[in-house]
Image 1 (tube, helix red, strand yellow):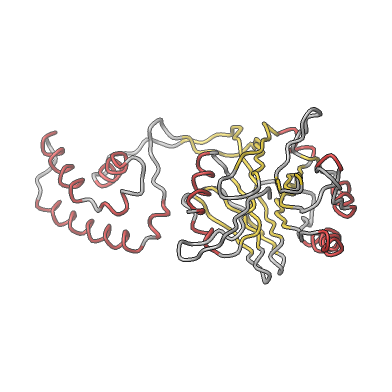
Image 2 (spheres, helix red, strand yellow):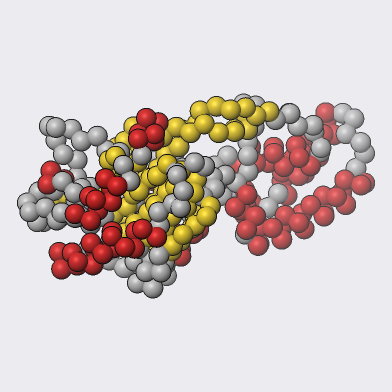
Length: 331
């Protein structure tokens, strides 16, 4: 159920890259329409980078503990961290920011996104009550010349985690000055699968984009990983090839429609049922099968908007497992 809520959240908010913390298993690698890099780690308090299909994050670095993962997207080095929590782990947390985080930094000049659940703040205004400040993190942020992507209103502080003892903004996204100029907006959104709010930042990137004619539909190729669907599809195509050999040439519209009706009537519903618009999928396969010439695809440079979210995903499990807690913060 929680995985389904996460999927609906990503699709509904049109998230391109999502950074999750407190990942306890690899079930989150099966999010529909997304691929994943997961660092579960030895402490089972892992981190993850989720990417919308078609987006690539490479040169992955991970911390053995699972508390950090980093990778390269275009000109930007993305770092996702989940720092030790609790006042009793203050020394461990400071060591994490001073020593372990350094391993995740880029080896050369890069734009940087540093995000996650920091389990501390660097300004007293980011929490109620006594602040859990981190000098080590503050020094790191200053040394990397990073900016808090969230524009805090002077009238009201937007916290990301609430408890009976108070509220705090422990989930944050830091970006370089260049990325700050590309920022289109930042917001916090209630995440139904977590007890943290998700922080969403939208940035623009200039890159090569394939332009398609209006209404051209692209099949989500993740269904091809379904072995049953693939086997049924192959069997069906063989059957259609046999029928095609004995059918006359499609010289008339009536014959063409009759052949299409046979094709769609027998099309396996297992894969098609996973799509929102089955008619589009049937038309796509019919068009591909009858070898109708495709429209030439062109490409050019344009500004495209990418959306980053940082979310805490505590113990999101498969239906076979049950846990009481699930948290989502920034990351």
